[in-house]
Length: 163
Image 1 (cartoon, rainbow, N blue to C red):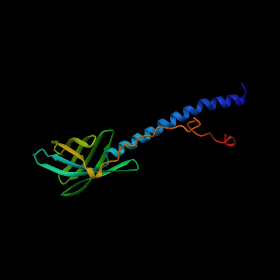
Image 2: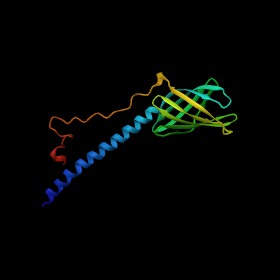
Image 3: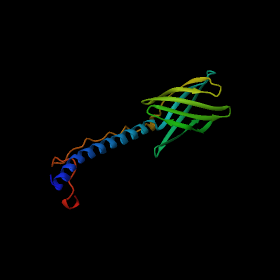
Image 4: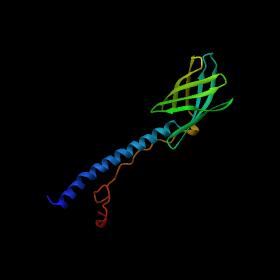
């Protein structure tokens, strides 16, 4: 086997593998971006304290550069979210009040959030909420199917001089 034939054969084997790796990497990045868009926005929340009182507030979650940030907005004012953690379907954060820190653990199910709060003394209460319609996240990005050009190739060939 001559050197030229060996080089051409290795290119034929490597190109499909490169295309596959590139496609899988692109799909992973798109799916991560789609989730990030799913939790961001304004949520209309309701929390029931252990004493039976119900507290209404807005939960605002923002994402920039892969990092999440947010605030809890109520009639008493705005509090920054501390230790905000967002995973595939979980949202956890803390807020600090005069009497101590309150921890929230919520699960996202479409346009709903449900979970619990834990007060400094260890008592708990249910928390529910729904996405504010005005801040609905855009639909997740879907990759477009690749349509090969008329030549039947999925990618245009480079000019001979560049090979």
